[in-house]
Length: 102
Image (cartoon, rainbow, N blue to C red):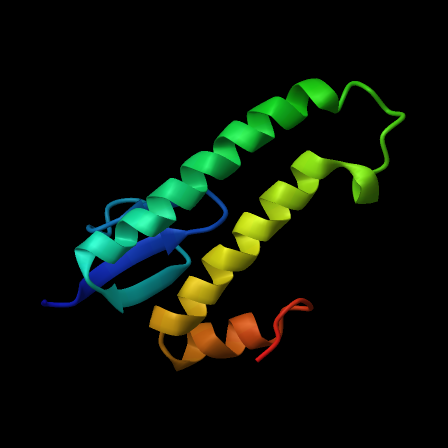
């Protein structure tokens, strides 16, 4: 299968096959694999919407909040994919993140 450029913005939780909007990373991958990004970003947006309601209850600290852990877990998956399909600059960026392990 042919690999195409996929434009990923972690800040905006978007993944596009065309460079029309802002992006932080350009990955070389098969378009079908880009669906994983879209699925993870969709899950993160749903979790953050649920978190917005929960944020008004200040008695749950961040480190005990299950929804925050779910978002963090998906973010780690996103950066793992960026590391796998990104160029050398993207790999170096991901490797300097505090939760990166080989």
